[in-house]
Image (spheres, rainbow, N blue to C red):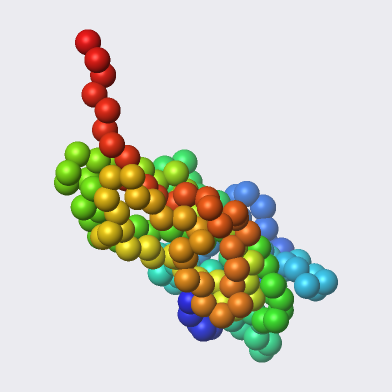
Length: 188
């Protein structure tokens, strides 16, 4: 589940807007971003790069932000990375209502070792994320699935995922997430 976390954002001044100004912010350890949505004005903001990186590394998607004395619930809408995918250059935060339902892709993490892989099979994972519909405050960081029971010919489908709360999948129940297939050798 998403962590109930609160951070403080700082608004950017007119001098901190534009490509060169954003680069100066990055050089000083700040990351520029925007806060928008829910019929409020779009606001240019900045946050300490280390604090932002901690949120991203922990998989936080929904959080409370405090700005100018008011607290709002937001979710990460977009992250723009540098060419090498190391540094976040810009972020977008979308204001949300805690009771609002949203559609979002949640990553899948496979855990364990499939016994079928030790007896000549190969693990395939055709699906790496599941599209779900849930309350904005119930977005899970990831879906962890155990594969310790998969023999050759076995699979895990979307129907086998146990969701919490009112969360539901937007994919067909028979959609395969992972399977163990027999390795076929080519004939000479």
